[in-house]
Image 1: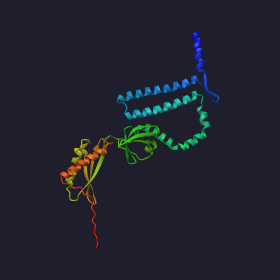
Image 2: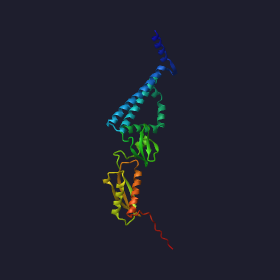
Image 3: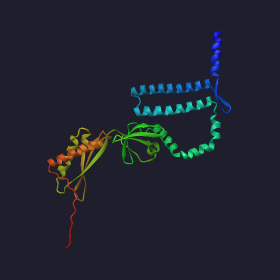
Image 4: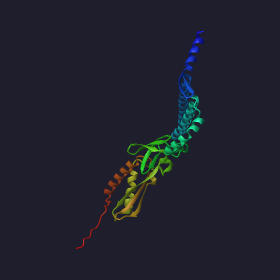
Length: 281
């Protein structure tokens, strides 16, 4: 008898209407179901993330691919959960969309760029052309991608400044992906020497300067070239490969220091622009 009374009391609590919205009433049981849907979605995402991490640790999936896969699953599950919650609350998705068609058109026009960024984010995650830790050059700025979101991505510049990038900027503009094919990339340093310098000696000194730096890779492919006869100098170019793509400006600076030291040791002069001024009496 006591059990029946308790069950009846519990049923009364669950059927208690907290508030009314139009012809619908929101009961305690409805809110509990909504809470269970949210908790179930969170638990399912947690389990999926653990499964993806185990797959990655087994070397069957790259970090960036694992991240992209989880993000796509996450957005899909949350969208599905929101639709189920709306149905649970008695809100018909079809009626809602039909009744607010004009409003949605206005919102769509006003948020056109936002939708563009949203679609661009999905394309980036599905296509996989841009991945986490990729080094990109956007409008002359070099950034390392730290996070790819559904609307914006987060990157870190060489000055350690975090920038928020709309996804449409990455998908619609010309972007140089320094990490797309391999972590190793070829860079160059330009330098001019005075006319009359020993060209073969200059080439030898430039290549030796690159060889001296510990962060240069593929040392057999280091090459120095005479590229032009400038107005005030013989113009050379030093080509080398480096794994440290993101911090290569530091590497370049250190190689320039080595070049300057070796030029002084070998009496090779770096000229400065000169102008002859003729004055008529």
